[in-house]
Image 1 (cartoon, rainbow, N blue to C red):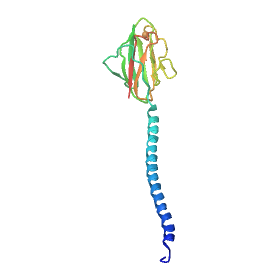
Image 2 (image 1 turned 180 degrees about the vertical axis):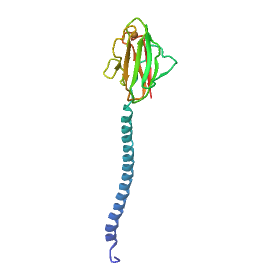
Image 3 (image 1 turned 90 degrees about the horizontal axis):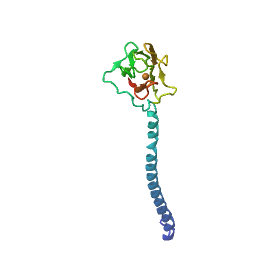
Image 4 (image 1 turned 60 degrees about the vertical axis):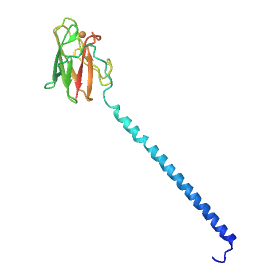
Length: 173
Ligand SMILES: [Cu+2]
């Protein structure tokens, strides 16, 4: 070792120093790289979280009839209301989630009425509607709607024959 000339020491030390600089630079790059990876990981869970709220009922139309203050709850799987010309006597209804409620509607009016519940899609006249059976309730007769909600929320219903004035809501929870 002691026999090496200054020129030979230089040939050894310069590459070592250069190597140390490269390592230091590489470490700096790694830190930046790790930071980028960390930032990149963050949006991934957000995308997953965005998929979850897709479940649930969609925005429902407003009830065309003013919703009454009196809440009528299902009892023993049955909800009773009536219709006149042209309104529901009880239109602030409440039904349990994941159970079948039979809504009984008596027509106390003279005109034909019915009940159509907008389904989870929040639109009338689509496949997920629940409609009275029979669909036309004549004066003095009774009809039923079998309603089995599997999603919580407030559903809107209306009469197909008086869509602008006759309706109400069913709160499901
Ligand atoms: Cu009607």
